Image (cartoon, rainbow, N blue to C red; front, side, top):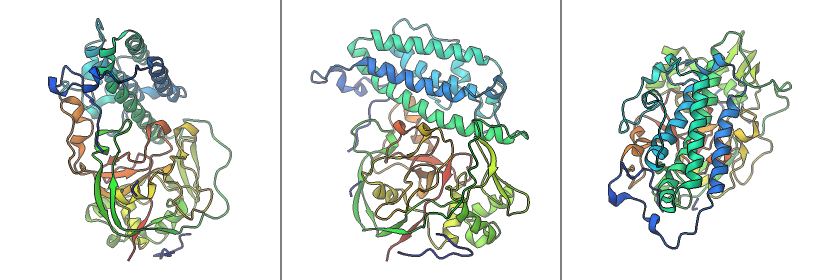
Length: 465
């Protein structure tokens, strides 16, 4: 396990690119239309399966809103967050804009103002309302937004039932993208609600409080798992859905390295705090140190204490005593990097993380478990790292940029990932707010270095001489 002051951590393959056409043919040149539309060997698609999946994903979004009161839907607690009502409307806007309007004959559309109010960042589609002022959109009402979702759902189910084979083939990739997009917003919905409730002096609970979870016993010991250097293939194979930024699959040279057997815990991070980690500029990147001083950071987001020993943590189940056995979460890249340096280690690269993940089955604490908080490691890991998936998104030291040969899709959908490849770092692994069906080992999340409101945590790495 990690010990006090300036702790010294003891030392102890192959995990091609085919992105589906993600743009409707009205906004694509003719040559970019999906070739599979006329593929005579493609088996018929059982659209009832798609319809059921659509219902399931859409129902989860509304189920996550079930604990809310009307007042909770409309608050925007900071510019990075969005009101719950906006998430509900925007995910419907996505289906309406990219699937229904170009793909369903006779679709009348919704209130034309919605195209402006609920567009997020797709400049090729049209202008959008200021992101930082989404909390000012008191109208349409919550009831009207739910009515908008019902209208969208009715039209989408009509598409599933009545589209011709060619029409369906053109729209199927966009339906897939819309479902994956809504699952992303389910995670954002939870993290935005958590930030909103944390600003309320009453510290309301999003979900009911569990029994006391302050933690007892000792943390699962941290050990180191070694990996050989060599040339590895990284990225999505092209079989099944993936976002464009996960491809193309490519070769990369990796030096021998070690990966920690588990995530960094709250107890580990307390050692860093008690050793004055937030007061030692030599541990921090220059911009990180500036941010610490300006923001007066002294602990991860949502940690509270009275005497620097009696720490509590705000969770979606309310304020409770800090559990030292749980993975530390809501830390920025700056904090993760400083902790790694203090530990005598470093953050892994995203390529190292993917090599370690390999073909291991994706298991862990996802949103499906309704825990809404990362869980402690249960047993020591020996041959492969524990807690690779779920729990918390793990910061890597890799700058977010395109893989060799990456090209964003043409048109508005090309804005989905590609235009954010600047001043951000990659996170891997998913979190307790991610849907299991949404995640895969090649998934590349990304955030700026100072952001902390997502479920972000730390896994350590070392060079192996």
